Amino acid sequence: MKSVEVVIEAASEDRKIKGRIFQELDKSCKKNTILATNTSSISITDIASYTSRPEKVIGMHFMNPVPMMKLVEVIRGHLTDDNVCKKVQKLAERMKKQPVLCNDFPGFVSNRILLPMINEAIYCLMEGVAEKEAIDKVMVLGMSHPMGPLKLADLIGLDVCLSILDILQRDFGDDKYRPCPLLKRMVAAGLLGRKSGSGFYEYN
Image 1 (cartoon, helix red, strand yellow):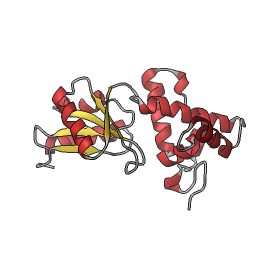
Image 2: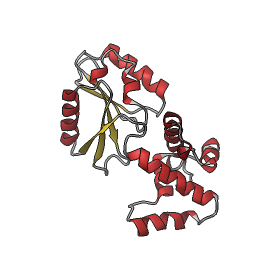
Image 3: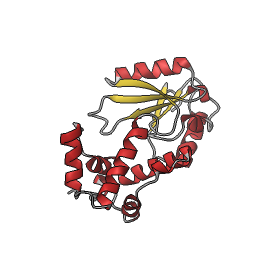
Image 4: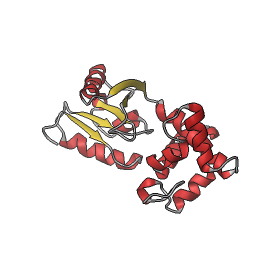
């Protein structure tokens, strides 16, 4: 780490874990190294507070699945330097991605909009509004989404979805982000989606 110019952290969506990593990176990396996080919802300003270089801490939120998706949300913290933003946007372009600059609010743009939709789809399933296949088909055929919200939740990981919703509810103090009880039960049961082999759908 002593010679790198940019670090992109992609650990679990947990403030404490990311904080410890950024403390170590701050000690190990040279002073002008940019420290980026792939967090999908945690405050960049909060993560930057674990370092002595908050002006060089920034968010680079890659969309899942990363090899297929072009978007990278570039999130500036409260103290992120303008030149750091420009360098990270250029870096994303060198990766053949499309950077979009966002400000530091819980969930940024993508997950502030996406996770309530996924959560509402889970409520629809729990309340018996329709079967899972029907819920996904409505959003694919009726709304031109490439993947239904329940299949997408399985791809993201139900534990990750729950973590993001918990962060949104806590940081905004708004119960519209309250995670569906079915989502909580599934995560408690270890049904996490593709990575566990079972979620709303079964995977071999």
